[in-house]
Image (cartoon, rainbow, N blue to C red; front, side):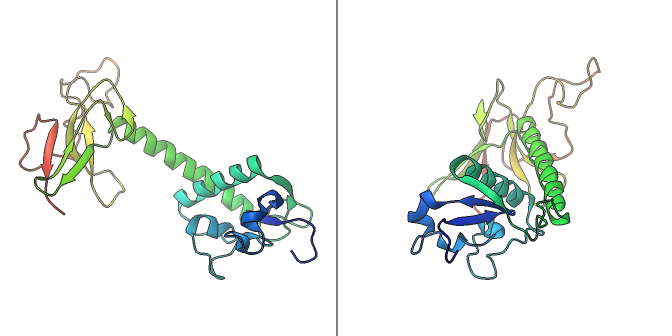
Amino acid sequence: MKGSKGLYLAILGRVFDVSKGRKHYGPGGGYHFFTGRDASRAFVTGNFKPDGLTDDVSKLTPQDILGLEEWIQFYEKDYKYVGKVSGRFYTKDGKPTKAWLNYEADLKHAKKMKSKEEADSARFPPCNSEWKQDVGGRVWCSKMSGGISRDWVGVPRMYHQPGKNNARCACVRNTGPPSDAKPNSAHSNRGDLDNPNMKEYANCRVDSESCPIADN
């Protein structure tokens, strides 16, 4: 800010002194365009043009909202918080506005979705995958795939997750009770193979831990 002894930026209406990062945030620095304003949206969109350097976060995706939360945590950890901007997120008295309450609601929803996605990935871990020019592609399961460590391997299936447009490869448990079975209920010893959202890969044995896939 002109005439200011410090170097400040704002994110979601919260102001931080970034003077110790003058190399990056000062004149000529790679992030100088963030200073002297609240450009919350640009932190997660990467749009650093004038129309993108805005504090309007009303139409961001849940993933972007979670990204903003991480940026707030970063500045809280590494830089000094000095106050609030009177405007979109806070009144001149420092009280939260409707825009801030909407952001909090969006953040709560985003965290709920993330938790649901993590539970779904634990239940149906993503497959390992590779593609080689001479042999094509394949997907396979192991006790560690998609960053999920477990005590079972499973078999590859095309998982048509409700609410998603595209199927993904999932490792499906093929023994024991279904993952959604109620305690002490009768069940077949087929794991989640009978889940209606699962489809077998073509040209692959139903019990194979590795399946070839067509070249996209």
